[in-house]
Image (tube, rainbow, N blue to C red; front, side):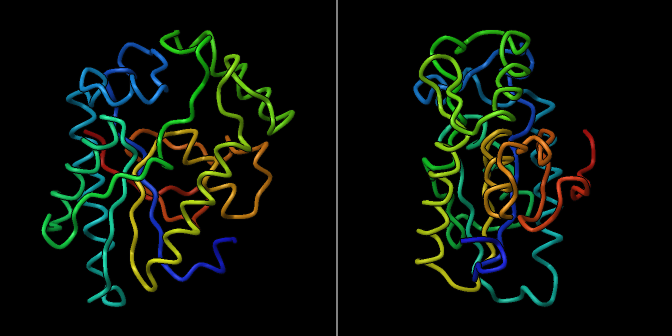
Length: 218
């Protein structure tokens, strides 16, 4: 299943700057990521609202009038907060567009050996190994690129079976989104970092990572 075969329109949004980003600490394990102490930083809340305004402009296009809008978010606190603020800023009503939590959108787990470690100890080496093999497992027991690719494909299979002609916003994390976009565009997932997302970056699934939708800086 690739993007040109999809029957819904998908938009991707990375969470805003989080408190984990502020201290450059890896928080990727689900039981840690759902804790409110790792939610958005104040700057990240501003970013989420700006992204929501931009998504609202997307929805105002004539060709999208009357179409169902769905918003799905990772269960992590930083993504749930981003989604809530973005939905509000976009002018969407909770009764007609409730937030849906999708476990498939959770952060890539970087393994117990890297959990709560500084960025400098992990990310560069993990991505170098990703470029060599999509089966590379980070942190001893983390998720490979293949693992993440499999779960996002499962998400799309579910969504495509449930809706047709909808506009769907997926709120997730950096590695999950870069792997998702490479997967759904049929690109080499070893090079998923070509599709890297800035915090609170909004992008159409079919849009190249080299030309992101601009989001006003806070």
